[in-house]
Image 1 (tube, rainbow, N blue to C red):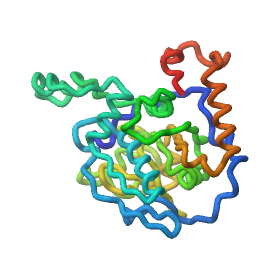
Image 2 (image 1 turned 180 degrees about the vertical axis):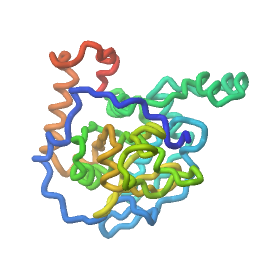
Image 3 (image 1 turned 45 degrees about the horizontal axis):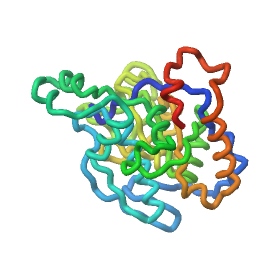
Length: 298
């Protein structure tokens, strides 16, 4: 079940820029009932249709790489918007994984350990923090250059605000969402369903949040009734209630091309990022945030 695991517990940083801060710089969203990735495995971008090329599995491969896989799949939507096809590989995600976490590949773990748990310990294959991975992506020194497209900033989505999720897909190509997956997404044979929803009896028993794993996906499409992502090589359909029940964190990432036609937004983001990078720790910041000096890399 590695394809559905690998996100470390959600972290909070009160310095994180909020998407709500910048709504005044966005015009009214057009009436777009469906946009981006759709169940037919194509990106529907207005009148443009971009096929999703078949690629190798990014999950179910023995690694807890859902966070870097989601980052690569978000980048895929950016390329689609530019009328380009980009198909991330497992190798791409593992290189990102090594940059955003203590994970490392080597032969020792496979030679000396016959069990999955032994290999996992030898390679530090215990997943990644979504928040820390995003900070690395937008770091000015560009530690992920050559692995992912350039990103200017990331914005946090308000909890339970599905309108912001849709608008972030429309404006910025997608949303990275951390999910506490329930066992109920699997069918009677233990295979993940294509449709993820809250059962009629509510989020209890096998539908308890986190009863399966902690997962990260890139929501890169929506319709009037559902949201869509790629997970374990298939398009998954997520009901709005599923997101409201199981989402623990959500961020959108702003690429430079999204700011080209919006100078006011670009200038405000630039100013806010400069203040974040040069200011001292806020008084309300908990003292136990040991990542302050090493993690203040936005």
